[in-house]
Amino acid sequence: MNQVIIYGSQYGSTYRYAKQLSEQTSIMAVSYKEAPDLSGMRTIIYMGGLYAGGVLGMAKSLRGFSIQNGQKLIIVTVGLADPDESENRENIRTSLQKQLSPELIGRAKIFHLRGGIDYQKLSLGHRMMMKLLYQSLHKTPLEKQTAENRALIETYGKQVDFTDFGALEPIIQEIQRG
Ligand SMILES: Cc1cc2nc3c(=O)[nH]c(=O)nc-3n(C[C@H](O)[C@H](O)[C@H](O)COP(=O)(O)O)c2cc1C
Image 1 (cartoon, helix red, strand yellow):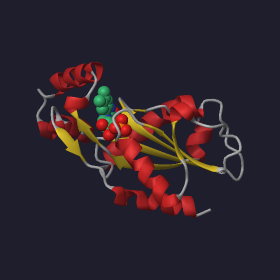
Image 2 (cartoon, rainbow, N blue to C red):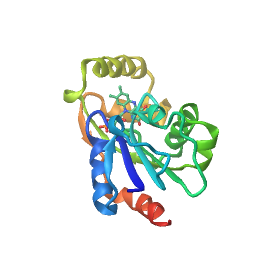
Image 3 (cartoon, protein in one colour):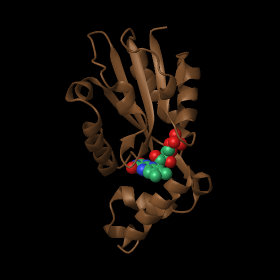
């Protein structure tokens, strides 16, 4: 076993993507809480849900890891904001730079997937965070909002799921590129 998918998922979207990717590539998927030693791995695929720009579990899992020649690091974020909007991709990239060393950022292949949210299933803390965020945002007209905040306002309080397993295809191609 020299390839691994590590996932950080609080509510299941990232887990579902990781499981599907695992089935399609036959690479074992494990939670970041049980991540193996990465030093001997040829391919490391880190998939994590976005929480206030942070990729769940990623900084902890990759702390102290330095990438060697011949090793491949693929980072996949899963968030509510639409990664087809360049502004959203730029925001995610900016916050990734705060979580990873320039060396890892420079070597990693980075992909963005869209997850979902179900307000009924959120923890009390997360529900409070979203409420405060919504209250601070919704006074500004929609057309003046950033794409990311618009997505938050439009889905506030709802159950939405933008999961698209087809979006795994470029990631599978990157894994198979050797
Ligand atoms: C407190 C909180 C903060 C979030 N912050 C972001 C964010 O910064 N960017 C984003 O695109 N999505 C954000 N989301 C949405 C999650 O990334 C989305 O629900 C994702 O599918 C969660 O993955 P998981 O189900 O694997 O935990 C946030 C959700 C919550 C509850």
